[in-house]
Image (cartoon, rainbow, N blue to C red; front, side):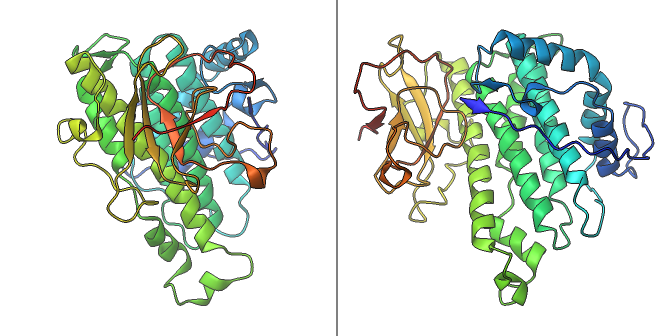
Length: 367
């Protein structure tokens, strides 16, 4: 179960102009737009409450109730965030007061939940547009870090949130060749989304931008762990990459009426190339597997995966769908005894069913 954390809401009001939600002036600072949008939130979305729920549909009635109230009340918030997507350079508050990032987290929660709310209304196009808005915000939060490692990591967290919503939305995506007036996602837009997901910065380069050259004292400060920061950003980038693989697989299925059987079938028409797994040997790519009759209803189960935490080989869970980073193998063993078998992401949407008593929740990936 997912337990959302209540975002820390500060009482400070941002004295920022309320821009009209039309095409922004290129001189506008998107950071101002985001902070103004955050100050306009009047109803919190589920991710900013203590409500417990799975991170994929169907959501409980209370989630739907809260989401609808938030959706109805926060249209101006979404308009400003969408407006900011046309801007590429952000200037953030300087100094050691990072309290504004609490507002950014809360704003990210609101946009992320709005994308899921669109999804459950069967509006694939609208859901994807909101996920794109959140992902762009994540990118701009990490702009011009000026040694602001905290802001870079918050941006990575927003990126992970967007990637999770992408996985959920894509798992039930409806595609179309129609250009206008369709709730389904246009295939040309889907190709644009794949490019955006794969447009990533190298984590080490980001750390050099934040901390300076690798031989500088900042890399060895008592409160800085660049290795952990790089690992965190790698995980977020990996989810973006696997979300791109997921959408590419759906485009393939839309064209060919069946799931691809290998990653190679997605290159070059759906993916520009097979992306390299940062946890591989330098040559291994991210993985794709089609588990025959792997779903409870007997249908095939497509999966994307990487080798992060794969000390016990490659093991995928069968107890529930996976649309985000997970720590546990599903067992009740102590943490040091749990298996680690890589990170798998479901491409198709499905509902779990109770497993027989004592049945393992992990299966080895077929060779």
